[in-house]
Length: 276
Image 1 (cartoon, rainbow, N blue to C red):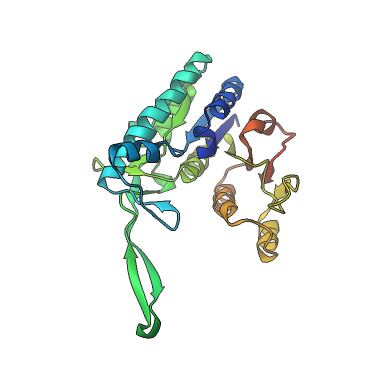
Image 2: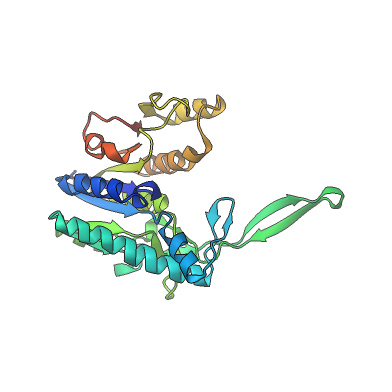
């Protein structure tokens, strides 16, 4: 099978102009079919502040109300995405900027209410409903694989903003890690896919205080052991969970590593953490 790289970059790269330029220069030189998925970083919050749109979070997750979905559509799908596309074109990388709404590539469903238990003292437990607003959850088997294949076969490099749609005209804000995993899963039917999550560390660390304690390989069994021994920091769990879900659904391998090590981590001699 032909190789395909699905690469996700997070806000730590988006928010740092020199780091983003360095990353895109490396990305442009990769001589294989490739897809880039980017997060939004802090740019939407900054522009929202300028426009008087307050950012609200629950348990660290952005609440996407009517004003905010307009804001993130403008910033993620417009400003951030098109700046990346323009830079890649200057590097002779024929990229096309996309959201999930384009060519019906990534349909999603609006996240239902999340019910959470609050402890209220003598009154007992109280259940509250949390509405994250216009946030989308992707159903992998609904992705437009035929249209993805047309674009890839014609040698376009696809660059996805973290936006999907509900099929009824509504744009939805969607987690970029999940979009990357979903694309990797559906395309694993056609390609040998390596999914690469780029963040600010060299890999998954056994000791968060020691930047050199990189775990080179994580399996399901190793992951269970590391969790039982409380050796992982909380923020890495979603990435590993997404990675293992991708492996279970046909993705050949997943790599978690530093954006600066991108080219090395596209080879067999990786620096980061392989999930297999």
